[in-house]
Image (cartoon, rainbow, N blue to C red; front, side, top):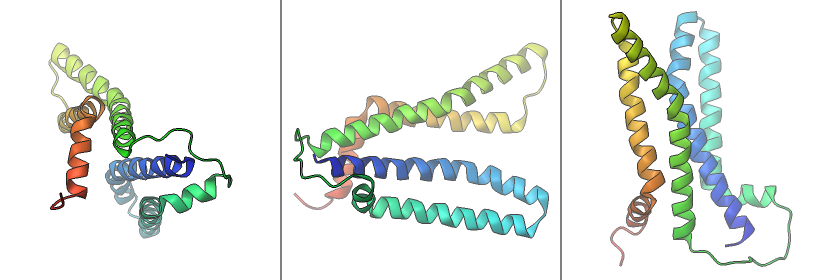
Length: 165
């Protein structure tokens, strides 16, 4: 795999990360902007969301162009040939590790709030329970990607080659 292909893979992984992170932050940003009741702030939020969406699409559909602009031009051949399956499995594992790292603080917070509410006989806030479902689902997807990357790889290759033998 050439250095341009490696960087292009990293660019695509970054596009996935940016899309997931933005989609996760968008509802909270929308709610906070609604509280302000300011149409200019809402316009700014929509403009920023559109710019982020455009950047994600650019990074996803043109990763080699971005990689060529990042790397200096060299005539060195690739040192070692690695199959795309290996790189996809590595990327899936890294995404799973990232999901687990992002999920862990929220899950610890939920456990602390749950324990505190049980100990003091207080009712848990409604949003904490719904957040726990999200963190548990994120944990499951993270573990699946981290430990079962070959299953994700098979799914991606099946979608890519659907109908073709």
